Image (cartoon, rainbow, N blue to C red; front, side, top):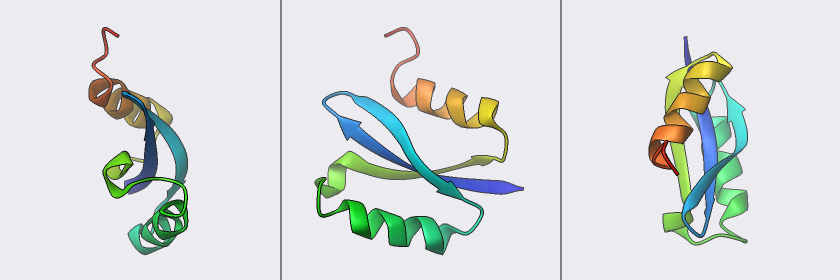
Length: 66
């Protein structure tokens, strides 16, 4: 099953902020975060619904070797 996760970027690193099975719920949360972050510093990713898959996707965005 797909899981959607809202990420924020502070500087060069992406961090997990919120997740849900419903993309619309995550997108609504993203709209709330727009008060604090620029659009380019917010991202919704879709992965399998296990923590290892989410962590791997975030690590890939952050360039796993950093």
